[in-house]
Amino acid sequence: MGKMLRSGDVILTEMQFIDSPTIKTRPALVLFEEYDNIVVAGITSNTSMEGIPLTRAEGAMKESVIKVNYVFTIAKIMVKKYLFSLSSAKKRKVYDQLVEKLRFLKE
Image (cartoon, rainbow, N blue to C red; front, side):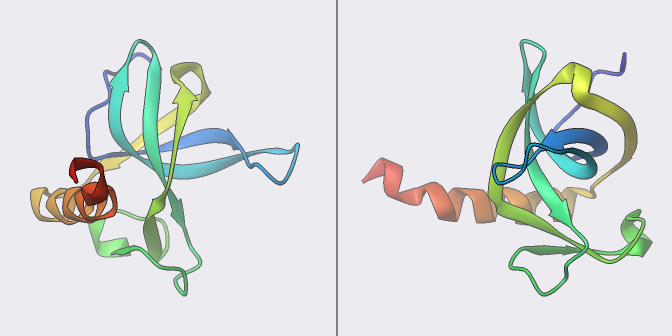
């Protein structure tokens, strides 16, 4: 994928889950890109999971949840497609929740 990805972009990417050898294609939220590695937060259509709601009106294929408790790194070559970008307000919610989860680091 040639497009320079930015924080807040939602992408379709291949990912391997810890509990399975299978590689699946799933949506994810770009947190940042560096040296052809992309740090992302997972997105799930299981709306009963904890996270930040992502609606069809915002661009999601189905009602979903951004899981800020599921952050991982992928290689840029695993990205299949750029889907859409979050609004500034939604990016702020993601950032605020990430900071809240990491706040103990500054103690």
